[in-house]
Image 1 (tube, rainbow, N blue to C red):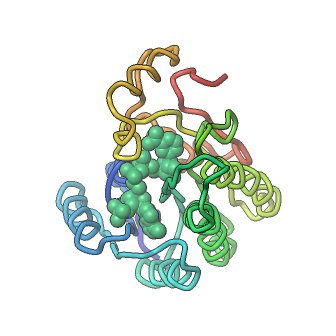
Image 2: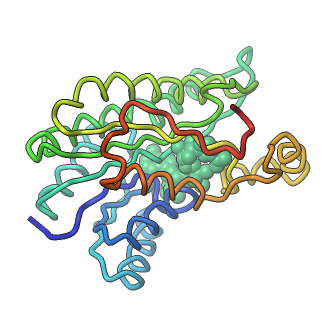
Length: 246
Ligand code: NAP
């Protein structure tokens, strides 16, 4: 078994996932990271190895694909000989009003954001149960609590993640595994850049802290939940939203 703890971070090629990977790398974890584009994720892996002297396994993995997700977990376990943390961060939006939402946009968001969390969580349980220790951290969203017009599919996927978090936490607590979610508010990434500057100003005005969040605001909480200090926290949803929902 390697000396360094090992974390899987999905959707680590950019945005919040990339900063989660950087934060865990700085904390001395070895990593297994994925995105949808092989060259991009391997470039991120090379930068992490160079900057932090850690080992990184990187691949293009469609987390919505059950077999691909399971195989990624198996390769990670085999490569490092241990598996301590799973961060389910990969996610997409396919926005549209309910009246007009296409079935394929519903299916894609549920498969990528929600079913992926089931596939990956199920796959890590075996090695984590064997080790009697593990951390599963799911990235939800404030809209799971608030709702958001035009995001019925996305809100349903994130609400599902939060319910799954509580259910799995109850199943595996006695095995030393904690399961928690982090629910970001509006964070400055490609996902929110699509909204444009005017919308950003309007959103910032509704946030008590007066600004959008940074990926590092979310990554810090993920790193805490992964740490030994968070050993007595499970089944929780931690909000990181500048006060926009309380
Ligand atoms: P982002 O900048 O759009 O990045 C999304 C990441 O997910 C990319 O690395 C992407 O890989 C990966 N990804 C997408 N589909 C995938 C698939 N099928 N298989 C594997 N990887 C996939 O998004 P973000 O803003 O950082 O969001 C990260 C997470 O935070 C998501 O779960 C999102 O719902 C959640 N969140 C974001 C905000 C926000 O305001 N930004 C707020 C609340 C919650 P490629 O680069 O290869 O496409």
